[in-house]
Length: 127
Length: 330
Image (cartoon, rainbow over all chains, first blue to last red; front, side):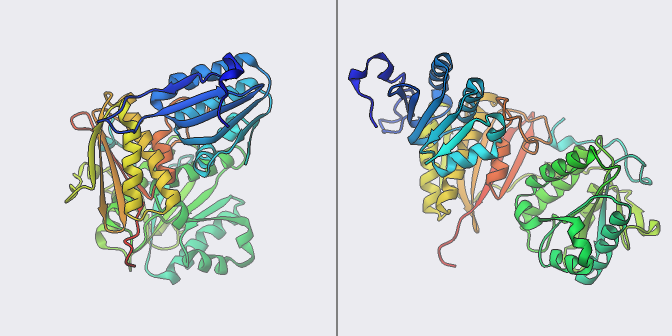
C-alpha cells in the first residue's frame, strides 16, 4: 500500500533516501517509513546503519503516539541488526500488542537468533 | 589481551576440587569410545549428576545403545549440527552450565568437537574452541567436561595439540585416577599467531565506508548466488557481511575492506579493518537483546559454517566467514 499525499502530515514519509549514489549506480539505501492512519506504520526499502537515525526518529513518533502498533514490513528488502533492535526496544516501551506484518524469513530468523522475543514478548508476527 | 596472547594461570597438576575440569579422553576406535564414555556417564548418573553428551553419529547412537534405559537421563546434543561451526559450542555449554549451576552440586559433559574429515581451517578453529573452554569456564561453577579424541583416526598432530588445550589427558576409564596424565605442555601455545594463507584469487574486492553498505550487500548477494550458495543462505551471508562491515564502521576506524573468494566447497567473505578485538570470547557470548552491541560476530557464528578471527594491535582485525557453496558439478 502506497501512502496517499492527501492523508495529511501523518501520511508523509518521515524517512527517505539516505545514502548517495555510488558511481552513478542505483544502489542506495532508501528507507521509507510512513503512517497510513491510526497505528498502522509501513517500512519499505532497506534499513541499515545509514538509515538508523531516520528509523529512530520514526520510532520516537510511534512511542509518543502510544497505543498499539502494526508494522507492515512487506516492502522491506533488508533490515540490519541495529534496526531490528530499535524496533524491539520501541515495542517493549509501548507494552501494548505489536503486530509485524509481511516479515520475510530472514527478518524472522534474525529476530529469533537475537532473542528479541525475550526483549519484546508483546511482538507477534503475522503473514 | 588479544586472541594470540591468552595466558594461563594454572594447569597440569591434579584436578582441583571445586573447579572446572577439562580433560581430553583418548580412545582408539568405536568400541573404546563407548566403553570409556559410558563409564563416565554411568558414574555421573550414579552420583545423581546431570550429564550432557555432544558427539556425532554414529557414536551417539552407539553410546545410547550401551546406556540402554539410562539414555533417558542423559541429554544428547548433535555435535554435527551444533559444532559445524565450533564457535557455536561454548554458548551451548554455557546455557547448560547456567541451568545446572543453580540446582546441581556437580554436573558433567562429553564433548567431541574434532572428528576425522574436518578441514584444516575447521581443525584450527576446533583447537581454538578447546582452548577457549578454559577461558570461558575456569572461573565458573565446578563441572567436568571430557573431550574424546580418536587416536586411531586423527593425526598425531591433532592429539599433540590437544595436549596444549587440556590440563590433562585420560587414557582409560575417566573414573580411574591412574588413567589421568597431567599435560606438561598445557601452556596455551602461540598457535593462533599462525598466519592465514592468502587467497589465490578473489571474486570481489572493495574498500567501504558507511555509504557503501547497499553496494556491498548487492555484491555479496550476486556473488553468493553465482557461486551456488543456497538461496536462504545468500540472505544470511548478506546480513552477516553487513554486520561485519558495520563493526568496521563503528569500531574499526570507519572504513574497511571486503573480499570474497571460493575455497573448495565454500565461499569465503573477509572483512578487514584497523580495529582491535580484545575479548577472546567475542561472538561466543549471547548478547543482551536489550543492548546495542555485541551482535555482529554472534550472528555470524550462528549463520555461517565457520568464522575465523585474527586481531592484533599491529595488523588490526580480520574476520573470515565461510559458507557452503555447491560446486554445481557434484
